[in-house]
Amino acid sequence: MSRQINKERTRRRLLQAILKTIHRYGHGTLTTGRVAQLAGLAQPTFYVHFRSMDQALEQVAEWVALELGPAFEPTVSPESDRAAQVLEEAVLKCTRSLVEDRKVAQVFLSNRRDHTTALGRRWAVLTGGLRERMREMVEQVRPEPAPADADLHAEMLVSIIFGLAEAHLDERVDDLDRAASVASRAIISSILSNTGVADAA
Image 1 (cartoon, rainbow, N blue to C red):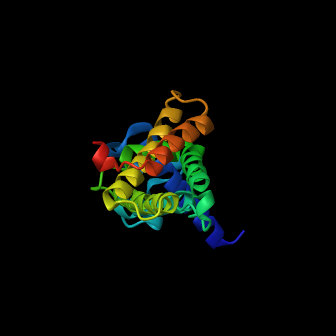
Image 2 (cartoon, helix red, strand yellow):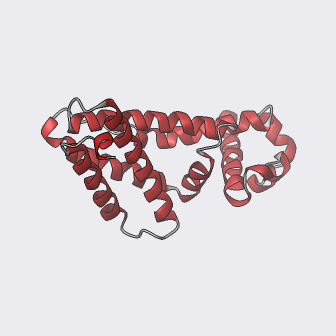
């Protein structure tokens, strides 16, 4: 096995140990010693791979973003008559992908609003992209919606994805497919309603 492959494996072990530490003990407990111990390595090994904990956290954020990224970029339907079905499928796909790795999901959901950390900032970018994609889907379901309606429906769809993921992880929602379907259809019904969201309020 080449030295480069060994180096990459060690780096990955350290990144996984950072994620595991945040998941188990919280962000404030991160130390190079704890991370190295959890990875089964000597503490100086940490500095062979990273200049600082901040740099390591940036790389954890990038790594997890690569894992979650494809799920957070659902495909907009080119066929307007399938737009509602595609939106429903996208909500389910995003939710399933988010809960696929319980540890990643819990770290994501607990850090997504903290923009002072590398994780929080990266999550904000991912969430912003998901929100924009959901807005495009809303516009596919009902072309030319009022901008405020499109924004609100997109925000609700993102909230549904995160809310269902949390409920599933907390074992409050067992049938994720059914829950995603019910929630999506309610939003689709609202999108297709003749009354604008702002008017209804």
